[in-house]
Image (cartoon, rainbow, N blue to C red; front, side, top):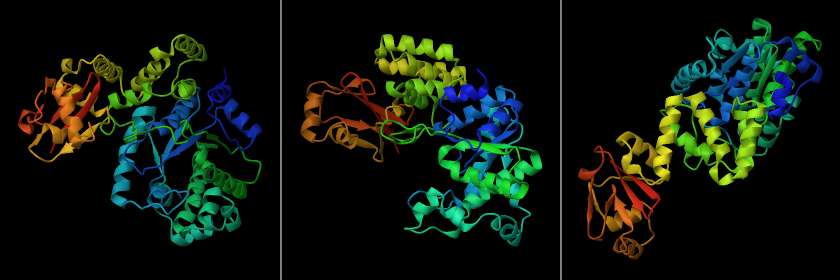
Length: 413
């Protein structure tokens, strides 16, 4: 398939600015950029879909660029319901540095743009004259996110956000001959503002164009990439590869084919073969395991995937005692049953309640009497036993096993 047809088949194109210009962009392999928000020190799985679009275009011969919104990040993209809390400049600067490293690693690009370079020598009156005059207030009021905020109120800073992001496109169009911008469909209003600036400055006949990438939503309507404990990040120091692997292999069957298309570089034939095998016995979760393998190898490494698989199999087969200390800790973190204990020791009955293993002391005593509780793989058969931090694993943690397969991590503070 041609790259444009492939992106459509994979479900990676939602809005386009102009069919003819988009086709021309793809056929001539024009330059394209996608922007990334530095509100955190790592990208998350939701961003990875956008990264995959960049990498697909890169493999198809396009010259691609990534831009970090260091200036726009200081203001914050308007939220649907309330003013976004501003972060310290120092934090944004640190996030920009870390994201730049991460993007270079994941894309192989030598240079990552930062839009602070577009504004650092610009005076406020230049901004108002050269940018503020380009776009009519009525045009901005038609943007959905701004119109929604009129009832609750919106600051001038957030109101101006779309102008800044729009100017990024104009600047890169003029200085670098980058003719296309893409991004998540929730950014469509900001993306098209840049196109409007180019039209007003250079006329309607330019090659400038843009397209958006649809957000992948979970069955409950929330954005993909979120788990019970928060977002799943691409930085292994924030979200371990094992936790990411568990998140991926637990995705519902209703989403898995779309995810293979959007998040992996498997061919159409490979995906169709995987889905055929998956549907023959969905209990084997063949497609989910394939998804987990492809993403972990691409985002982290083959070694990270193999380690995550080993931990996952040990947890599934109830053989956590075969794992090394660090791997055991990762496996337990992945259960999301985590409790911090400030005391040096605690009665087993109280511990079971604090760790949300049971709801009452009666239930706790009953479980112990029925020999249903293990701590660090040791059977607890007396409800008066005291669990001591001195007996923790690696002087750091302990774990409770309830029955055969329910695990709870205890972190001693």
